[in-house]
Image 1 (cartoon, helix red, strand yellow):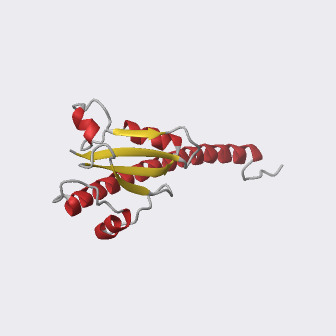
Image 2 (image 1 turned 45 degrees about the vertical axis):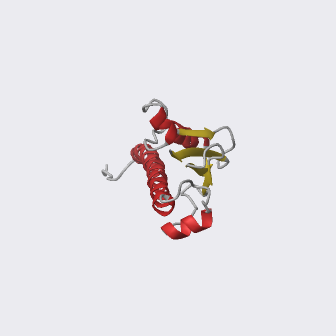
Image 3 (image 1 turned 135 degrees about the horizontal axis):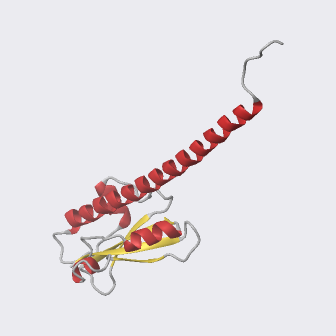
Length: 154
């Protein structure tokens, strides 16, 4: 009898199953890395926005002259965020010496992350001696419909 060489169908199915498990694991890691990168980008952009507003309007007694288009143009960045939403600037109606950065277009999980994140330079974080995050938000909307507000100033 002649001996045949090669792979059996069972061996090939085993290899394909192992490759499938590896692919699923790699996809989960890539997805997690992408989510982390988006969150880091938003954090850095909020810091850039806050720094820009303080540099441009810091000499005034209040932030009532805040204008989204002018501020974003002056600091050289777009008001679009990595989630497909926007950043908005406004004045706190109860205190014109405070301004609010709003992050729009978030998923529920990203909204919850930013609401619980410690925004160390924000008003509420400083008032609470670091016990509160400094952000508020509505995280009950559909994905892409949630927003977070962070107040800065005195």
